[in-house]
Image (cartoon, rainbow, N blue to C red; front, side, top):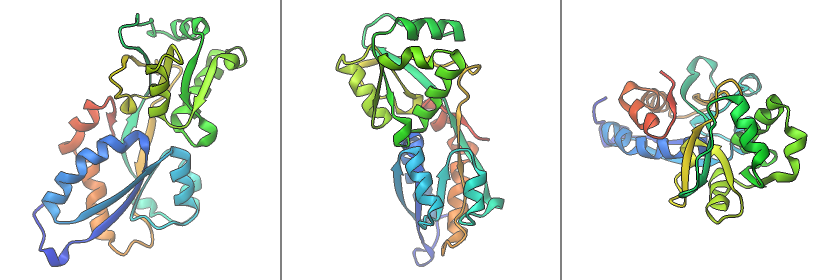
Length: 239
């Protein structure tokens, strides 16, 4: 992409879940430098941002997580522009310097969780996609009921890890791309058998007034040029 004439530059609005925030914030400056466009980005919980898109709030580039059919059914996005940007796994963290548990198999994860006194993670009921994913993992492991007294649900992935760093839990879980606290060590992503990485999918809004620029942003967010940024944050590039 070549730099554009300033007169042709557009302001592109984008909304996305927090799980892809760090990646997008790293990518935007290069896109702006190359195109002359400006990007105004909004981030929030997976469920909350999706609700905003489905309710009709106009963001030129909405990024949502599956299921996608209800989003498409609203008519607010162009189905033909559907672009998978990246997948992000739920990961386990422990306090800095603590022994790292074995999470290599579903049985090992089950053993770790049942041995924990307190497990912090973002609250799925408040829109956190990582929380929804982890609760599904508990059901797959058959320990959802047994774990209830040990679960500490908080608002947002960063808070789940901050709670861990303060010593209020001994295991913390959220999207790998959200774990940046110096007070914790990352153990790794949960096994795929019990936790499928959550896809983050972008569209162009049907009423976008800068649709061409929005398509350019969407294409850049999924380009091989930025794949290493996703990888550096523990995400799997969509292309």
